[in-house]
Image (cartoon, rainbow, N blue to C red; front, side, top):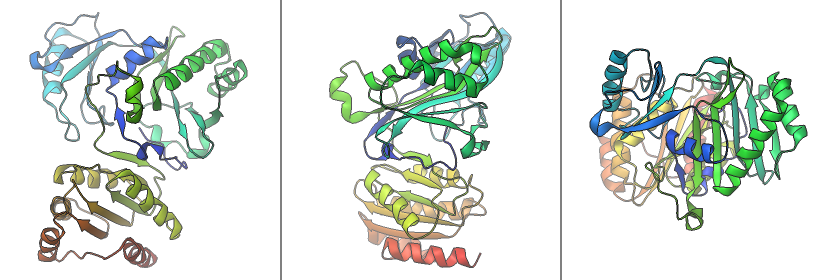
Length: 377
């Protein structure tokens, strides 16, 4: 889950990183004394037929992407019949090109409130930044940027910071519990070389307990030599999509962390507002690029898409095929400003020429054209 309109430091793009599945992230949280729901995992090779917890239970698809709930990947089963039917359906459900190998089955919590809490690397302050909001859950992106509570942590959280967070949540009675949770999350973050721990929602139960209802966690792959215990199902992420400003005018698609960072910086330097950071990875396919276009269409104010590809493992013709498919399948696609170079460039140019889709020689040319287009809107 990404947060709109924040100057999000996209240090995730600097290093290869691993996006953990929810059950993997929650195991790390539990080992760090952060409360999580009771639950267990089941392989989809044999879709689970018998529930091992008291009903109702929540069945969750374990795929390395957000939006599972809205796309049918999370279901509440109140009866054995529902459990069997939902398990079978979710086991076969593809979500953003990911089909689960594992299901997570958890107790259904007695929810009073859904909050938001995350820790992430803040490159500008060279610290771990805490972000919190009183309204968590699936609509977190609807919250205004200035309504988030935030502070930097250069060392373990103090009781005063726990009290400040409790006051922000209007949970003064939970000051000690929140300070203890922050301390444990901070240790978890540092000890596991994390770049992001996002608990959304952080659930306050009607019994007064704070529980990590869901967790997204990314780890710095370059620190793997320190962690012989690492063995995760999802592995290294193929792409990195981060919302920078949901009201931005320009969406970006690039391959490689450095190039993606440079593309975003160039958009900002040109006087335009980038909506997102997207590194489609080193082996992007036509399918993954098409999914990127679909994600970009969720931004309502984007008036131009800048595509900046220097192909190595990623092939220009694969990107070209995705562009052609996107233009034919996706309505209301904003104008595209495309720079391609590298592997199979000539094949890509031939494909795009046949569809009258122009290429531009440099990123600066793309930005100049995009700026001219936006000025006329």
